[in-house]
Image (cartoon, rainbow, N blue to C red; front, side):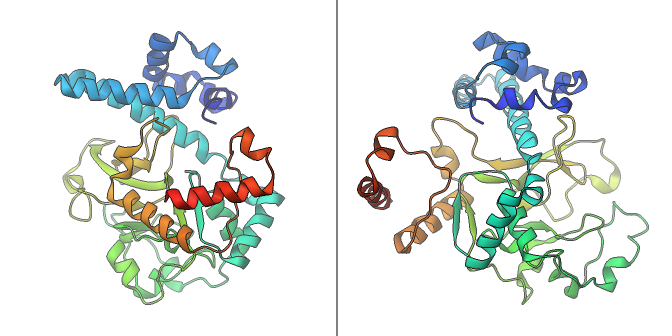
Length: 336
């Protein structure tokens, strides 16, 4: 989708709606200024997202060096809206994980074989497919049927220790990424319910799975607080519920609607994804990605069987047969 993102997005009724377009008009204006492509051209011809994100980043770095805070803020807004636009469009495809026979079969294979998975995709299609294959949890806890607090959502739902171990599916994606999070949204039906990560992962039954999905470019359900309110602040909402924003990583459902950024109880959250830029080093220096890439390196160095799906090698390699494939994989392993 790196070259046909707008062609795909603008075929969707919602994203071509004038109300939606107004929300992201600054993105279209930016592209018009530097690439001379209006919305009609974007809808009918390729556009390189990597080139756009890379140029945005270089301009923002330059503005920062010049101490031009106004220009830097403008470029950061363009980048954030474009990233959110990309995330919103990708999130709409998750339904196909449960409606596609191919994806359901793939989910069954993964759930049966339990391989460690390395992926560069942001979407949660794999998670949804594995959940579907694992089956719905037949038990429902009585505690989950009780009414929410009288002043909900200002007061969070109290969660018992028994509820911490419950998941709507037999495979719980909260345990599936090889990392623990500072705050999680419990994976169950009904009202959105959040708990502190240390409490969730300290439960005896909530141990991380031994066959993780290592998402090396981040995920559409991983977020950080932006310390910005989406709505006016009320007295009880002057700070996040769990004592501060700094470095917190959230595992929650991201809900985008008409280009509105996702929020958690009124605080805007930013998806943790490696945008398609040419130079990605600054992302990989972040602790979450440093850990994931080191974990991936360790897994690859010990694996005895490597299955590659949907990754394109150069035409020269793919035309040279099995021996060249083995040589290529050996080169990849040595490069780690």
